[in-house]
Image (cartoon, rainbow over all chains, first blue to last red; front, side, top):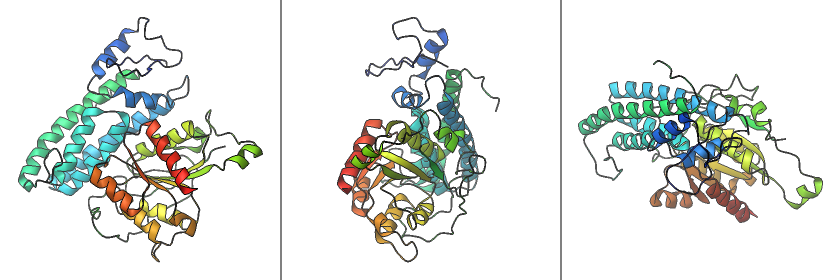
Length: 172
Length: 210
């Protein structure tokens, strides 16, 4: 599948995939919509590096990777809910860090940022990771709100990526 | 031809009861390891089996080509171990090496825990290790200490005790980088990995080891 990515930030990167329309030619409406929605959701510099690792006319690598990420994230969210029920802050921190890494590697900006906050709150630090200690109650309160936000951000990212690959969203 | 060797351990997600990264080097129960009939039997933590982890997918269009004997004489290629508990990160990094580093890397082996890495380093020589930091049971720092010190609990081949180790992590603040250096890591590459920075770190590590 050849899809042109356009990055509205001018960083000089070439986002054209082999065989896809050049940036100067009209692009399919789906690509326009996808790339505009992607702003703030996906760091295209990072994501395009993944796409670059696909074979020329075969997006199996990146597509499979993204699907594996979806499954990993769903499992992580389930584990987060369980850890929240158990008030296990350290587990929540570890899960936040775990998902942060793969979210970062896919360029999922908001999810990554929220995972980092979860990592810090779980260690009873503030959202920036400074060494100020917050109470368990405050940490749980912040995490409760954050998990809802994170899930919303993940849903947005999943929707964007499924749209990018031309897939229907799966019903949860 | 490139080959990919994968060992896997359980559980499927980070353990809530793992010791903190600041705890002393801890012993751990040895996870089951097994050699690979790819891909169905391998389940790295956090993800189901992925075709991208299969030897067959690695041996596709981007299969490494054997250099001529003359080229091999001129530049011995590198055997790399990647250690990361997150299968997404393993997939990306191993693919990156396969696609962009065929000039210097001959073989990549992936490990999903520090314990597995130490077990492998007891019997097989490597030229470079790309090490995740935040892993359950043994962190990347603890694993590096164990490699450098070669204890009776984790004996390490003499060659591997001085193997160049590059941290690959989102935990890349100044204090953390200093810690990595103190325990014997040569460099630190931040996640998400930028190809040029990875190349610079790998080439620097190779030069330092010669």
